Image 1: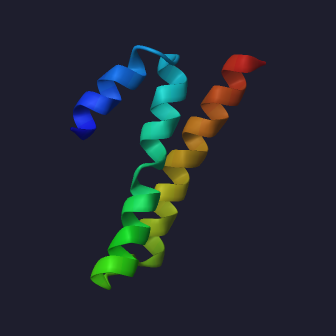
Image 2: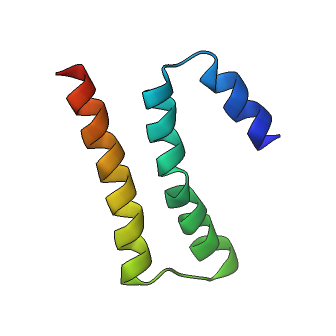
Length: 65
């Protein structure tokens, strides 16, 4: 089901916007893992997620300029 939703979304939004939304997916997954499963990420894992999201956001901003 999630893959189908992704494909349907990709047909309706620009590819770079879709890429940013996909790069943010680990954030809610990590939060749900913490709240539901009691598992957490370390500082390096959060830094990695932040780096990917930031890189995609900068890329989107550069495309608009």
